[in-house]
Image (tube, rainbow, N blue to C red):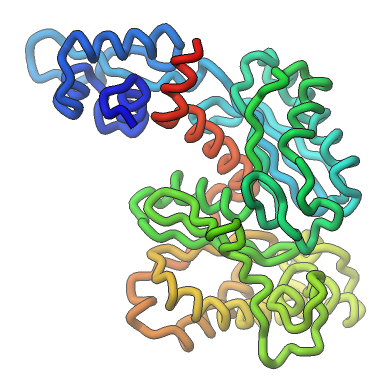
Amino acid sequence: MNQGSAGRLLQLIRSGRATTRGELRRVTSLSRSTVGARLDQLFAAGWVREAAAPAGASTGGRPALRLEFDTSHAVVLAADLDTRHARVAVTDLGGTVLAERTADLVVEDGPGVVLPLLARLGAAVLGDAERPAHAVCGVGLAVPGPVDDGRLVQPPIMPGWDGHPVAELLGARLAEEAGTPADLPVLVENDANLMAYAEQRHGHPDCSAFLLVKVATGIGAGLVVDGGMYRGVDGGAGDIGHIRLADASDALCRCGSYGCLAAVASGRALAEQLTALGVTAGTAAEVRALLADGRPEAVRLARDAGRRVGEVLATVVSLINPGVLMIAGDLAGPPFLTGVRELLYQRAMPRTTVHLQMVTSRLGERAGLLGAATMVVDLLYGAERADARLAGR
């Protein structure tokens, strides 16, 4: 990467490391004229603007103008796909939600049914936000399954989606429904990864090893290391729901194996256990409602499920040594967290938990959406991609 390029200057401005012309010159060692020329490129693209420095920032003499990333010059379409519903939003480039819609669906109906629905929601939410199609710079999609190079790979709770060209087809349907450009970038990523990405960025930016565990219909984890999502070699990192439990060999999982953590401790598993006890619960969301009502059967099972997850997390935490462990999803309430703490702190070495913060989600149901939007912005306005886009103007 050219350390003196316009994209590099944009990166410094966005990160807050250099927000005046003088700071850019000091950080990059570029001349005044070169910095000016690079900024002219960014001004012409509408990506950067100058604003008056905050009151009290001046140290005498002529007040410096502060350089800002203009988060209003384009928008992102972000979508979070769950097993029984989808959430679609328009955000600015700073992650502010401008409009949002949700719709019920069944992910098992497959991409041929679900992707057209997402496209229609995208068109509707653009209208709600009163933004034209050409203002969309990219699309981010969070999905409840492993993703490698933009494609789902054998997702246990998404039959019919394996290897499907989701990005290409969603982009084509959006072009039909909303009039977005045919070559619009569409990025697809695992939902737990994106939730972790957003939660770390918004609430724990100084945490260099951040672990989020989502317990909903299934169980998955997202890991952010040194500010970037850790995916493993082919997108399989964080799939803790399919770690085998030695004493659960009779529990059949949706993946086809027996003894998986998700088969005994997920929202789907608890719904089945409650139904067997005569308490109606068909989905993880219905289990959450029962927990909110304080139903004793649900509370007991959620605490037991937390112990199961805590048993697995004792190994995960010992391996990763995160600074923050966040529990998110439908079961992320006091009974479940109590169970996790019981086993985690009992089984893990004190050395790996002494500095561990165990917290719940700050962004709530918008975490996946905001992670998807942030992913798009970080790619399109990262130094290398920004330079390529500027060169093509």
